Length: 378
Ligand SMILES: *Cc1c(COP(=O)(O)O)cnc(C)c1O
Image (tube, rainbow, N blue to C red):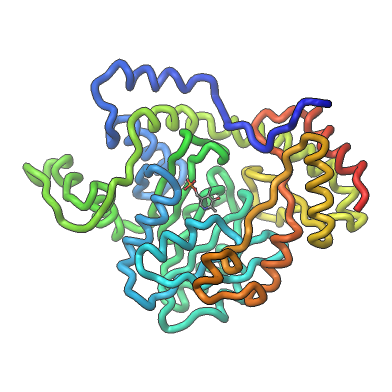
């Protein structure tokens, strides 16, 4: 039996210990320290946004974004059904009802026309994701949000160092969230960030981030003590995580480039099968520069997807299914949705298969995966 091929190997620069040792040699571990600030400054400079807040996860960043909206019972938030649970649950925790939207086949992201149809007088926000590090139709969604006076929040968990027409993902909406979970391109074990392109969110977000206090004003010398001003929470990571993350952020291009090598190998070798109609590959339209977060195939039907997944598993190759649609999950059904409410999402999710991918995946490993796929017949 040949060595198993894992699905993911968390990115390591090999130099994370340098900043970690500085934390260990100092006296501040708790968070909101120099390394958190350096990570935030890095993100602000990289994205050219006025403010970034480091969080314990992308889930926490989405929860902060949801709290900023001051939602009321009955308010609705448009989210794709094909996403990670936090895209929906963060807004539910803040009192809103998630309204699930279909995805389009080219990018597996929010379908603009379906989003338009689902807007009601109670809709408050649109929260698309950028699947696999390729932009959704964010310009059309931004127009839609503007026309209906809705807040556009990008769940850019998979979108760092991905670009559309030269503009980084996470800077098209009013707010955006990133993930630094170990399965993402950059990480600190588990972490995230909230960013905003609009100054008017900053004071309240500062207060939420500081557990609902005006501590940020005190740190800026605008008050001599800090006190409770609203209901916030504990959102920021420790300095240990921030130190690890800063080193990773400083290697962002290295991570993307290394993933690109494996991604391009798959794309090149799987193109003939796509031309023959054996599967469909991710669409990379003009103007898109992805970050190679994941590589997937869309098989012609659910049975073939399962057959290929089992075939690869038998050869010790971890190919994953992703995501189980939210509207037809046990929670979605409890909210009153039925699987056939979003037939296209249901169909596409059943046909998608993700291949192993990480920064530094050797060409020989990519070849072994493709050889195994070539040897498969449905
Ligand atoms: C990974 C991911 C999340 C959650 O990120 P965490 O940092 O693990 O909370 C949310 N949304 C999307 C689209 C993701 O891919």
